[in-house]
Amino acid sequence: MTQHAPDKAAKKLFIKTYGCQMNVYDSQRMAEAMGADGYVLTEDQADADMVLLNTCHIREKAAEKLYSDLGRLKPLKAERPDLKIGVAGCVAQAEGEEIIRRMPLVDLVVGPQTYHRLPAMVRGEAPRILTDFPEEDKFDHLPGPRATRRAPAAFLTVQEGCDKFCAFCVVPYTRGAEVSRPVDRILNEARDLLARGVREITLLGQNVNGWHGRGADGREWGFGRLIRALAEIEGLDRIRYTTSHPNDMADDLISAHRDIPALMPYLHLPVQSGSDRILKAMNRKHTADQYLRLIDRIRDARPDILLTSDFIVGFPGETDEDHAETLQLVERVGFGTAFSFKYSPRPGTPAYDRPEVEAGVADARLQELQALLTRQQKATQQAMVGRSLTVLFEKSGREAGQMVGKSDYLHSVFVQAPRAQVGDLLRVRIVESAANSLRGELLD
Ligand code: 5AD
Ligand code: SF4
Image (cartoon, rainbow, N blue to C red):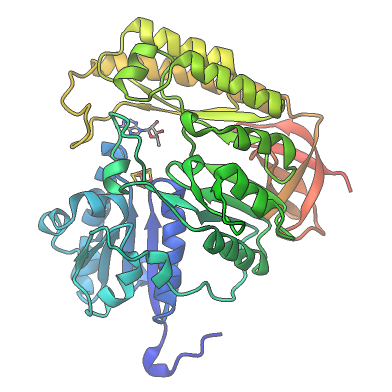
């Protein structure tokens, strides 16, 4: 398959991705960039010529994982000193050369805005630490995707960074200010993905619904308008997006959920807390009631929409009463699923120095919230039983003839479909709900 001369025999690259979907997308682009330099991906770290860890800084635990993984790489590096070890992503951005000081086995440190220079760094033609926010757009300097087939569901980053400055969050510092990619680049990348077998695109951004840009018609477009333009592209069967801020749910985006069949009935809309006092301390700039009224408007537009959210428990100053208000909000909304986290103080953020809630108290609150969210998840899945949905098949399952795919509502669905192929979008009747997936039967 490769056309490289023997002296450029394929080297092997192992990438480990931590954190959010933005990182999954970035890892893919880095793999493509390195591919242009003769590297192929390997699943086997022990066999790699280069190990790249694409890291997450959002909570302390996520950041510490990098150091334990680097520790585990020591014997491999001792055995093969020519093994290259690179650290990319948000820890790279936040800690820069500190990483090499702490872990001298690291050869390269590259931030999320500079990874187009990774191949040059590996060749020794660029500094070994690059974590600035360059003037140029990395996407202009990355090799165009190669004409290889892709899995049927793909990510496409349309927006990066965040200007919201929630008091707990490192993203405005690690990913920088909000930047929207231009319309034509996004549409071209979408067309390219479709030509390579993709049928479902998830638009990504730290604050994706804050995306804006100038359309082909010369007008200023909001995110809803972008989705409308994407939906017109032949062959794009499903559109999703994540992650959104409640204050950027514009009317045009809400009505897109009513008007556009390809826009899937699923919305991840983090609220973090149900207490106005805590929302204020978090600098979320909305109240619990405003969130609930927003949810009503979204459900008016798309009654069956599945809602998910993020929650932080134990934010500094959170009382039992505040926590009870979070539980109430969850009861009121009824989420399909949600992520909940114990507050983790992050250096450099406004909340870092505030007095912490006692760990035991925060743990108990987390358990209580998670129990409620699990009940809601079960109920949501159970309500799917008997319904016919579409499933986009992404891979074969463990049993003979079994396929696994995602429903409109993003549930994993296992189906006996011996003649189906990866990439088929078929109608399925849901017959059973399991812990984290559904079972269905082919209808056609
Ligand atoms: N501590 C705990 N959770 C956090 N999140 C972001 N920052 C922190 C933090 N310092 C959570 C939020 C966010 C999700 C991606 O991670 O809930 O929505
Ligand atoms: Fe983690 Fe945020 Fe970076 Fe994603 S953007 S990898 S969640 S720190």
